[in-house]
Amino acid sequence: MAAHSGNARLYLASDGVYHLFSGIQELPGCRIYACQEDLEARAIENREKVTVPDNFYAAFIEDVMEHCKYAYTF
Image (cartoon, rainbow, N blue to C red):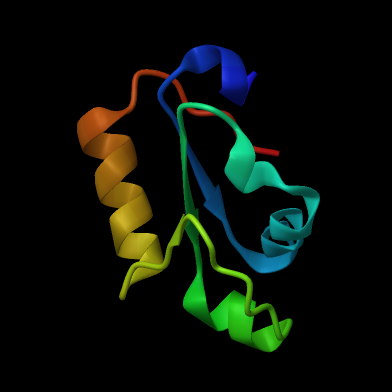
């Protein structure tokens, strides 16, 4: 679904940060954001092509409210 949108933003929090091991960063047209605290809690250091905002949840809410037509959660 994300690959077909051409402009998806994926926010990874909690156990969702484990998706960084799946190669999700290689999806075309997707921007990946991850929560710093969740990365640290799971000892994930591979942050290639991943944006880690200073305040993950504030950035997420602002993005949804300002730029999002559709939001999907899994």
